[in-house]
Figure 1 (cartoon, rainbow, N blue to C red):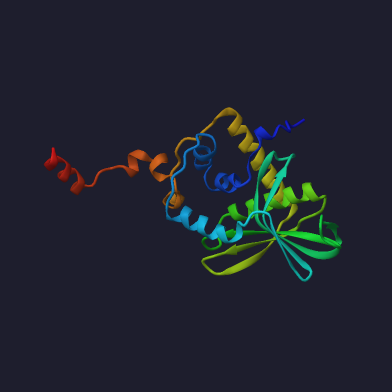
Figure 2: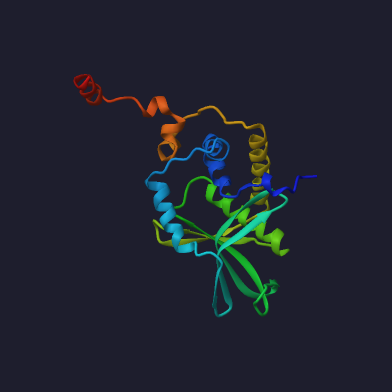
Length: 219
């Protein structure tokens, strides 16, 4: 049986890091290293619009909850949903403080544009799994808002993608419990990584000819 001690829970947001690059995930979540860059700062700015803790807003048959804390005892993950929209529906579940029944739809906000990989989808699916477990309902649809294109995309959350999230969560816990940081494996994705200078110090810290000459002059 899985250990339900919440001290062993991992961050839900780490699923996206793990899918992007397992080494990046380990540097952040195991070795506790982080480095700000323009991308992370822009992402934080975007999330400020969504992250207004514990706010609920009623819009007709829609209840909008921002910065909703979620967790899954099955996956042993915990995190925050940017926004969860509860749409009134007789097939849904009851929500404390609201009349009627509602179906939840997680909404994730992203800085850029849709990506060719599944990282964003997997993070959204992890949120859906948490909501299913907490509210005892099915969550088969969510949305991702991409700031660069100013548009949100409806995303089907299939059983297949949920199973993939579960496999990834198991692998993350295995890495974390072993304290395992994978070796460097470079690729085109490295140029978009916020941890370049930590992960690849020899490559990133090579001195230019100009800096070398200036250094010699100043000696």
